[in-house]
Image 1 (cartoon, rainbow, N blue to C red):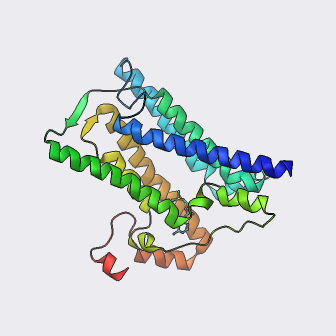
Image 2 (cartoon, protein in one colour; image 1 turned 180 degrees about the vertical axis):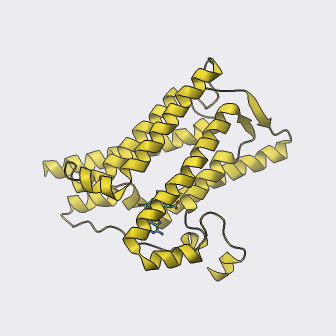
Length: 247
Ligand SMILES: C[S@@+](CC[C@H](N)C(=O)[O-])C[C@H]1O[C@@H](n2cnc3c(N)ncnc32)[C@H](O)[C@@H]1O
């Protein structure tokens, strides 16, 4: 009983910490509604800021790339109970993201600043759309499994957890990585782009290009021919013209 309560509290804490950090990230990149946005803080020497930011981005990429791999999952579930494996992944991801948000060094020099207020409004709307696409996609692919909630609830009810099946809801019939499309939109839709935000957008986009290939490699090995057919049928990021009609 006590163990079940611990699992539930642990999983719920990981999820809430992630949600709070995600909300903070939305404000951080926009530079609104948070104590420290991406361009805020005392600007030190540019070389030092670049070095620190690169280290933070590398840490984030390394944690994600390693901990999401099936071989790592097989290895560490020898020590971590399977019911909290995903929650622990969520907690670790949240910790490195929070570290990045906290320690990010500003590089405030301007790359672009869009003038007309209508154009700024359009870019803000696109920014919001990116996050909406991302959140919507988590529900399409299985929000509760993705963030470890299904696993902890199944444990509490003494049910065996079954990994979710590969799904093809509408958005996953348009593109293979809608969640990453949401990130890419949000990273680049910026009425004001500083050098720091450019570094962030370039590095994060570069990592997405690598991350989706790693994921596809795993899914290929896991699902075989049906996934090969999916790869041939559905583009990675940009829907085919008319895809909505066919979908
Ligand atoms: C963070 S999600 C990102 C999914 C996808 N790359 C995207 O951008 O929408 C990563 C997890 O989703 C799983 N996944 C990817 N496509 C899926 C699909 N169509 N149905 C079910 N799970 C999927 C992967 O195996 C991986 O565990």
